[in-house]
Length: 490
Image (cartoon, rainbow, N blue to C red; front, side, top):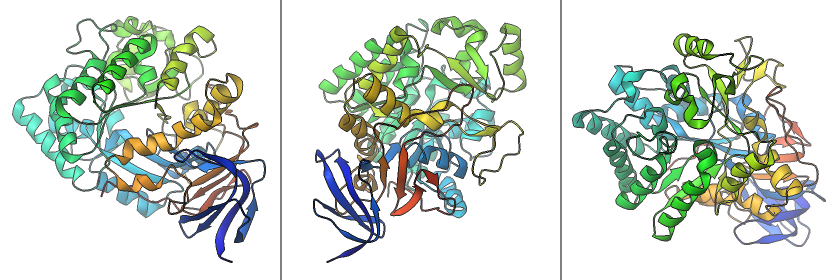
């Protein structure tokens, strides 16, 4: 009899690709699943998973929390792979090197960043950075303007070089630069098509929000798919579409029917988060989304922004400060229904848009666990997957458990996997696939993070295994575990 390194025994195994949903033993040797068996398997470590769901680890397409502390918080929400794809990094190789040198609990990966490159070229900044640099310059007008053709050519050339180094696609948060010529966006999409990799877009304003927009944000994405043949991924379609989600999803549905590749993601919260200096948070523009200054709350501070004067001062003094943007009241059934429809749209991936952890003291240690009490973030960082399982599966019954697992695992794996062969070994529980696995109690799993206590970990995830190694065991973080591996396009 073969003896495996690890056996998760007698759990309810869900494999979303084959449709398996039955009691099985899962045998792991090294970093790979080697057996999924109806008969008991022998293991050096044999862990009884009776009563638990055993499934692929969740894959977060849209996480901005890429340090150890953020990884651990997301691990307790069932995540085994975190990918920074909307904002990205430039050069991506530097972000990969830094993560590898420091060690990470979860698998990680990066797109190349159109925004970082554009900021560097148009603002005369050093060429390089990630989400921190993006947030630092988010409110500067000069990077948001149209560029001359030779400047666009330089931007595209720099992105092309980074794609050749293994970046997972192109992050294009064009919604933060609303005056960029749509022709530049098409040029970036054409580059992605040539590389066989997706773009990950934070959409421009919808025409309902800004009748004078250069192009409707949803139309821009689907047109690029049709004209260039690129795989266009629509980031957090819930928060950019808000009350217009039916029109946007109808447009996506039509372009899919015509052969265009447009994929979507959503999260189950009514508040977004971004830098207070974002163009669309200018006080004179808030009405486009039905907002007022009081719709915003500064991360780490109690209460909301008081008035227009305070908002203008924040934008002038600290444009990169993270703010909650309360778009919809998720406790109002009619308003939450907009979010629900985004999540239930065919093949929508669940993704968090996880925010970087900050410490009110300003001196947090990302290696310390448990998190210090002054650590703050958006509750979606800690609770997106627990909330999906609690609310959409257990309470509302609008998703089956099997379908919810698929949208957290196989769907995101396939979004990235069209141009990244390594992702075809993730999101599945099959012999030969990566041993990235979670075991959770479907009757108990639940988010705990709120807008007041933002970093409370999800409960109910008993075990989280990354590359065959426990990152969470018996509901507790294994603080010595750093098995995360890079996910690259080559």
